[in-house]
Length: 195
Image 1: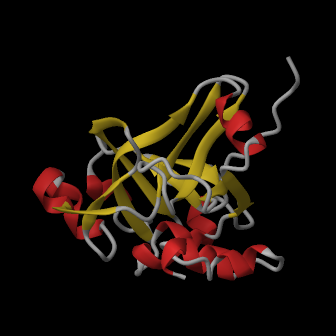
Image 2: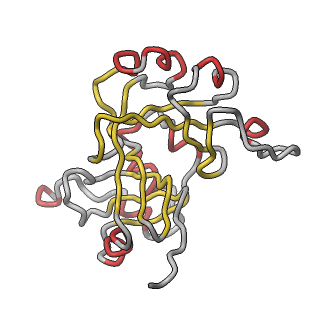
Image 3: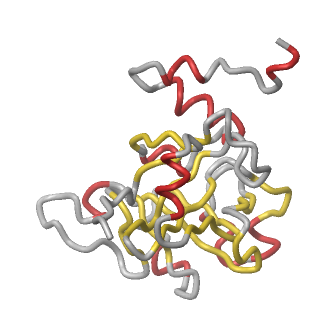
C-alpha cells in the first residue's frame, strides 16, 4: 500500500459535483487522516439545538451561534468539542508546551476538548468553542478515492473557520479566499438549472 500523506488540519471543501446530501456545500475540518482512515467535522451545519440543551455546563463557553453543529452523519448521538486556544496557551509561544489540560492539539491553535473535563478547567484558556454532534468518517483509502473522483477541494484551514460567526456562508468564504481558480467556484449557483 502506498504511504498516505496526512491532511490532518486541512479543510475538505465539497465541489459542486458532490451531491451526497450529507456533504453538499460542506466544509469539513480533518481532525485525523492516516493509513487507518480519516475523521473530520462539518463546520457549516448549525442545528436549531442550543448547546445548553445538551451540554448545559459548556453553554457559556460556546461561541456564537451557541448551537450544536451537525459534525457529520456518523454517531449523531455523540458530541465533540473543538476549540481554538490562542498563542501561548496553545503551546505556540516561547515555552512551546502542550496546551491546556483537557485540550488536545489537532493543528496549530485548533484542538479537541475533553467534554468530560470540568469546563472551569479550560474556561480561561479557550478562545472559542464549538460543539458538534456526530462526525464524518472514511475508511482506509476511501477519502483518497473521493479526492481522485473530484468530490473535494483540499485547502488550508484558518483558526477562524472553526468559529465562523456566519457558518452558513463558510463554503463560499473559504473558496473566495483561495488564490487560484477555486475562488471562482464560490460564484457557482446553488441550482445551476436556474442559471
